[in-house]
Image (cartoon, rainbow, N blue to C red):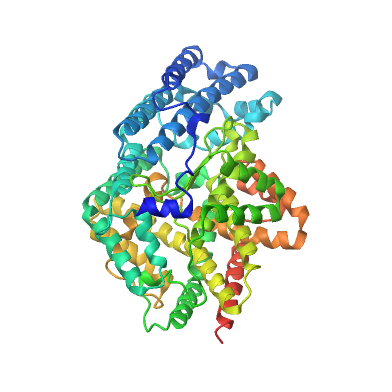
Length: 594
């Protein structure tokens, strides 16, 4: 079935060319670079381990430059191994290469961890003097952010041991999770996760219900494995947080995002307070569909006027690039390269992981994008979303490896903004009020998934981590209870959640790969709504500032990077401004049925 879909949509040949990284999985260049990484790390450690406090600014700059060279080479190896594996999760050789690279990464990390530890042990006055030196300006923010983790670092021997154990820790459990989901086949037809999930958008209620049951049954057959993985990684985080003296399960993520706890609390509180918007929408949807009761498998049912049709890949390309060009020709030119130079992997393939992502790779090469394109209108938004990431990563590459990677909350801003551009462009082409309302409803559901659902999932994570710490190993039933307890308030009495839906926490990879990540989506969506309002007011003058924001990458904190837009992230009114934009969209949909 997947092969037929790929042929119809024109995606069969839309596969990435990884030769910009390495010629092949068996190429001698990979073996050469694995050796070089270890050799450079050993030499650097021999010269400077235990001597950072004795360095002058010139020597310190040289150490950081050499570390960056090593980390870039490691990232190149890791990118190739991961991308080579993720489209064929059942291939033993691809898995072995990924494991070998991760083991080398751990060895190099053990050899080079001395720098972070010794830099963070420097007296603040000494460190501040270094940070004022012109020759270290390029690395100033990077070095500053390292020091915010100083209170949480362990002894040298403990940190080296943790580096040594990394290949058999979180990354190994995440690879197992990816293998499990990538190779699962759902229902009598043996479909992929992506194909079954697409049934939830089908106009026929029985098709939606059957798709939900097939997904649930596939997940239930492996529920004991999922439960063990979730418990193991929650316990690993519990131990790490305790050893590093983090005050809460999410503190490390806040530091990585360079955000104050208060900022995230303000965001989450604002979103929860507007859950009634979700209740209103799904009660409206119940009316539009003519149902007495709306179930979880009805959440994405198309409303009247939403014509379902297959959009070929070439048409998707035209829609996305046209919307980008209307905002910025430069943005469109960069996105065009992803299509023309084979930086995208689009077909549905058994063994390929579901979902979508953009991998930044290294500044010297270019990003790569993975999607599972099934040809529906939502997939166009997904392509736009990942291309938004890709454009951001290309523009930020000029900051160098250490400063190009934006905090997650700002990384999501670029992707969500790209989605909004495509939505606005498509909306202008819709003529009839019924079709327009249906299209707005579809966008509202996407926004709800990005804002309200992600905050609900953030609350699930909190219960999971707190429960694991207070109660010990959690059963599948307990985790499912946490899931329903945090999902149901978002829907209120507008949607009935079934017991089958209770285990759908099992396939959310962010909970495992990046604990605490999901609030970044809500942050990005609401920030984008505010930024887009400024764009409508300012026109072309906004475009340059927006592209400068993307070019800045991770060279400063979100607070600093957003100063040119006059945004106060700690002001509840800012978040409610974005939520009010959502309400105005909802009012428009409600008025269409009066």
